[in-house]
Length: 340
Image (cartoon, rainbow, N blue to C red; front, top):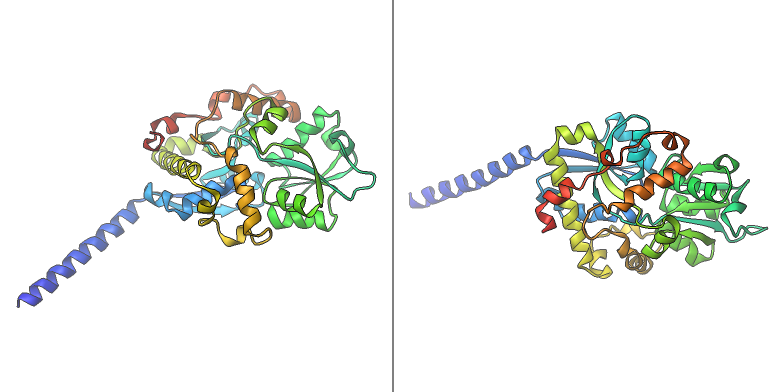
């Protein structure tokens, strides 16, 4: 009899734990995140947050959807098939010029990490941005941040963006293949594709923004890159989700800045470095660590630099009255316990 009572008590405890867990899972709000190229090292913090369970710990039922470029991820959130984008900040400026309010809620990368490179076998060789006139350039996707970057460099060099042919080549393996098969003359992309192609001797780098020094030289200061951004209407309707996303990301960034590349690599999926090898990916990660924001907070000059770039390369932005205060906020970072 005592045994039966004890067994019944044990089952009641187990049932209670299971029902509590189910209730907690049911109460966790869901969020769909669109990414413009998951394998880009610039977006690695999202994967680390997933692998280490930080979204779940923040109380979120998170799902991520991968796209070939930032413009495709943007289309997903504007069209309603995703809630939030892990993408580059400059899209919030682009969309405000079109009358749509999207806001970045946490800065993931403080430097773009975007590189413009040309095929090393071109004859005659291309040694300057101005010499790209008449050539074919691959970007992640037309209308993406890599496309904005290219247009900015072309205009600065006195070349109209219409004077080059632009095609979307995606990220990682597809971008590498586009160079290998000579489908493009130049490439605007990010790591791991850039480091891999450079190591093989397939490209020569013309412009680099992977470090503070490089970004300062190109933009004159910080330039917010990867962020979480979403329609203002979504943020207003789901402030708790926005806060939980920021909490998880700040926790991730702080963890990454306190760890060696070897320690971080334990949470990097094998398919991320299948084409380059684990050792080369670890080196890329080491070289890229200063790109990731240590705080998640936007610096005042960063959004101004982004507006300057887009105003030069995008006539629609140039003629719009853009209110930068509507394109980003530090509110959720300031409110996050993970910031302490």
